[in-house]
Image 1 (cartoon, rainbow, N blue to C red):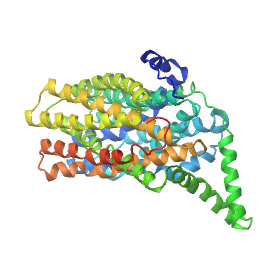
Image 2 (image 1 turned 45 degrees about the vertical axis):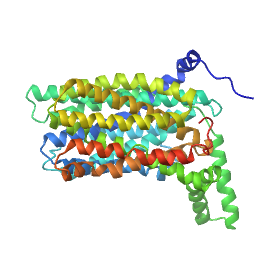
Image 3 (image 1 turned 90 degrees about the horizontal axis):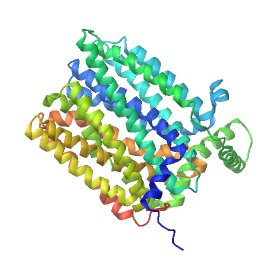
Image 4 (image 1 turned 60 degrees about the vertical axis):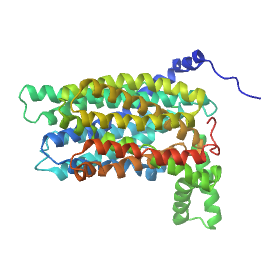
Length: 457
C-alpha cells in the first residue's frame, strides 16, 4: 500500500513540535564557531595586510572537520568527569568544547596577527578541533531527538538544524562585523581582539540555552556496542588487555564502516561517498573568498553585514524551512538536483557582479540567490545522511559522512585564494570555474539515484 501524501498544511505543522526548537538551538551552537574561523578570521587577516593566498591557506584549519569521525567512537563512550554526571553524556561534551572555544577567544584577544601569525593559526586550529568535536555530539543529540520511525520529522529536524546553523553563523557574523566596526570607529586600535571578547559572551549565552535541551537516556546503543566488542573478542580466542583493545577499535571504528558498505553494497556505497565529497565544493570555493571579494570590490563591513549577513539570514531561514517541506514532499534526492542547479546559476551572478563593479542591487540579488541555493542544498544534504545512518552507530556514521562532505569543502577550497592570485585577481573567471565545479557531483548522483537505500528519495 502507498502512504498517503501529506498536504502542505500538514507538512508545515510538523515544525510546531517542541523538539524542533531544541534542534534549532543545537544548530546555532554548531554554526557559531564558523564565524570565528571563517569570515571573522579572514577579514581580520585581510585588514592586517596579509595576502589572499595566506588567508586561503589559513583555511586549512577547517580540515579537522574532515577527520572528526576518527574520534567519534571515543565521544560515544568516554564520559567527562563531573560534566557527564551533572549534564548528561552529550551535553557534557558540548559544554567542555564550548569552554575550550571561550578560552581560545580570550587568547586571541592578546595576539597581534603580523607578529604572531603561527600562534594565531594554532589557536584557530584549537577552535576548529573543539568545534569539530562538538559537532559530533550536536549531530548525535539532534538525531536522537527524533525517533527512528519518524521520517517526516527527521526531514523537518534537518531543516531546523540548518536554520539553526545559519542562525548561529549569520547572526554571529552580524555581531562580529558591527562590533568590529564600532570598536574601530571609536578609535580602539586592536578592534578585532576586542570583538572576540564580545563573541566570547555569545558562547556563554549559548551554554545557558543548552541547559533547556532534553537529552534522551539511551542505553541500547551502548549495550549493542559492548555486544559487538564481546563477539570480536571471542573470535580472537583470548581475554587480555590487548584483545580487549583490538575488539574496542574494531567494533567502534570498523563496525560502522562495515555496516554502511553491507547495507548499500560496495559500488553504491562508493558512489554515495563520491557524491558527498564533491557536492558542495563549488559553493565552498565561493564562500571561502566571498568576504575578501566583497571588501576588494568596495563594500564596507557595515554593508557586508546588512546584505550578506542580516538579509542573507532572513532568506536562509525562509528557504530552509521551504526546503524542508520540499524534501518531505519531493524527496531529498530531487531536492539536491534542484539545489545543485541553483548553486551553479548563483555563482554566475557573482561573476556578473565582478564584471559590473560595485552594485548594491546586484550584490543583494547574488547574496539572496546564494542563500536560497545553500538552504536547499544543506537541508537536503543533512536529511540525506541522517536517513543513511544506522542508529547503533549514530554519532560515528553521521560524523563519517559529514566529514567526507567537509573534506571536499575544506581541503580543496583552501586553494581558493591561490587560484584567485593565479588568475591575477580575475574574480569573474574564478566564479565561472566554481560554477563548473558543481557538475561532477550531480553526474555522480544521477548514476546512483535509483539504488540508494533510504526512506524516501
